[in-house]
Length: 142
Image (cartoon, rainbow, N blue to C red; front, side, top):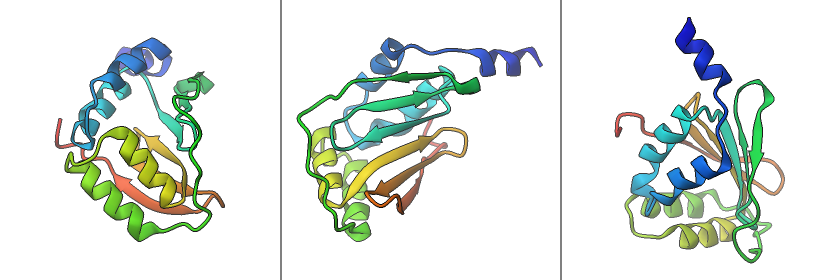
């Protein structure tokens, strides 16, 4: 019981999350990153493709926000799930860097992605709030 209580009360800092994210060089590194931030107490986060800002959510309503990371991108109004699936595939294979992935996601019409560390999914959402792709996060790779 004590271990569960520690998990639900642990509060992460933006600095801890940024250190973990700095280790990600390609999509192939992503599962290890998710494991690390989950251990910090992160439950979910929303990444805004337009500017790279993130809202990180922990237990009991705890949240931390980051600022914009880059000059705003134009998000396509025409959501294209097939283009997004291709973009995800090549990124997971390590063929693109993170900025290239963000640019391609914007072209595919992704407004944001939501990482769910409890159910181990990355959900890509368009400007209308529609789920474009629900990508399982591989847990067996770490």
